[in-house]
Length: 326
Image (cartoon, rainbow, N blue to C red):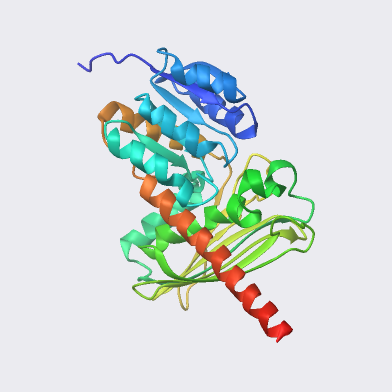
């Protein structure tokens, strides 16, 4: 007979769109007892000082996320923090230190796309070896030209534009399928409609094992687009579209192709990713085993690549300006 477990008392910091989605997932999962959702620094500080919590979801802007995450870990709370985890890899330093001091706390980052049906199925197909090994990738993730607003266009808050906010999801997925981090990073950015942050970014990424990926992250598309093509030694897998809260990137499909065969297309009508992600977080808390997806090392790896794209673009721009003056 399974012993009864008390519910995991969960607080949510951040009453925006992401906080609301996390709250809905928590209310639907009987393992969690939703204590409260708060907004603002003062209310967050009060929540983190409370003894009424076991875990906390942090769904705030990137400038505030690392400090709150580190504080929660120091309080002995399990943490699920939204992405992007910080405005730069350097800002993750206090989080890394706190996690090392509190190894019994669970820490996960909200790279929610890992839990979408098409992604889960594609991972299983790659692991099966039926289509060979991954040799390269092409990824495009973009919004309409009017798709960026608010804090996402303020560099002091966001730490970047469309790449930091949305493109980091594609970088993380590419890491999943590449089998390791990208160590050679070349990037370009442009400012078509936004003066302070980039609204388009392009990157050429390579792992130490020779897997090559191209990435385009843009906020100047005619309409929303999500597409990740996995080139394998014996076929191709394409993740076309993804289910989101807005529905703008739907439909979500997985297209599996082999030479000389008709494509196999699987469509996904319901998004279970939020529930699956929170369930995995709950499993880690109850079992005392680290989460498998959205780990600190994975979040740091994706952040490092995004930082590298910005740095590469900045070096290129500096060299071009110096050449022009010369």
